[in-house]
Image (cartoon, rainbow, N blue to C red; front, side, top):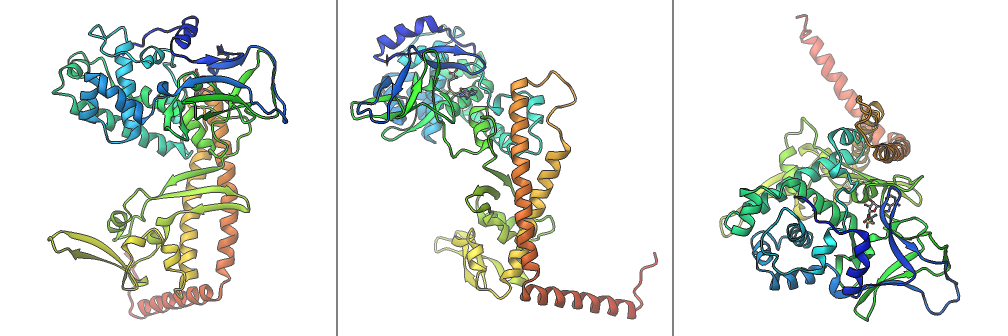
Length: 478
Ligand SMILES: C[S@@+](CC[C@H](N)C(=O)[O-])C[C@H]1O[C@@H](n2cnc3c(N)ncnc32)[C@H](O)[C@@H]1O
């Protein structure tokens, strides 16, 4: 659907009409970052200042929160119908539906009754039509993610977005207002839904009182690792942007906030579409799959209940990994796991998981602890480490053998190529350091007495089997 128009010169009037106040700061179009906030004069907040300089205040009733969506539903029938039919699934989903309503009301493609306009209706047109997050990249740009942890994550997100949009659409076929837009005129498409999701992901923030919200005007602040400002929700029913203690900003310089020190490189790219220079990977998450030849694979996945993953992160004392499913993956019936069906009094039957004959269904993600006092515990750990090493090696190989630049030059925007190249380097570095740490763990386990004895007995059993085969004259000359 085409976007409405709301240019920056008209913005001060909107702010004054809606009681948004800027103090010595204004919004401006910046090179390569869209809009941003810029200081009108030199600003300083000395360490011993008692009063913290406020840069921007936004009344709480402009904040797009869960409560605001419910309030708006009371005054706009078309939105209420949409929310009743397709909403109330998640907080994020409700906000996306609200944004969809604003997209319609502000679009030149919509010529119908304007209903109840909210300050957001006009503000929505100020939001970018393109967000540099991967869900909005072209096929050629997406192909640059091959081998990174985002390859699977972005594919899953795109498929979830299509599914969500189909769900919304299917729930609206008997609502005349929405039927016209979604079916008859096909003005709203899945591309609009992808944009609304991208806007929400890149602009929502966590407020202490209102929860996850979008805050108009505050969402014009760009990110920096060396942010000079921070936001807070105060007791005066406002959200404020304030200058950090010890910060000084020159006239004409940008006012930035910190989007989250703890976010990994992959999360930054996924949620905001850019990376600070020299950002380390921090962490990555990869999907895990049960072994191809495991007859219990389906039962294991069912009992685990969620898509299994491997998370690797840089910790203070080296690299750390967590993959609760990997232990379940490596254990089989001979080790002591069993599945059974439990019939309830009402006749329903449920799959249960047993470890050493104890029902551990509710602890299936805690096998690392469950195997702790088993005599073969070091063997199980060795198996888990081997699986994790294989998974990371395979990922690192894919990453290295698929360069970021696709065959057809010119199809990938330079800034996206730069961001992906940085992500690839950072993740490869973390993968290589993790493999080194895992190798040391594996080598230590291979020296463990129990492991040595176990592997020795396995080898002896194998040799006996071979000897028996050759004395039975079973050599295969075919
Ligand atoms: C909350 S919005 C900030 C305002 C936004 N620039 C606009 O035009 O409305 C977040 C988006 O701004 C851009 N952005 C923020 N900080 C950035 C930075 N340090 N470098 C590049 N882009 C940045 C990214 O596109 C990000 O998804």
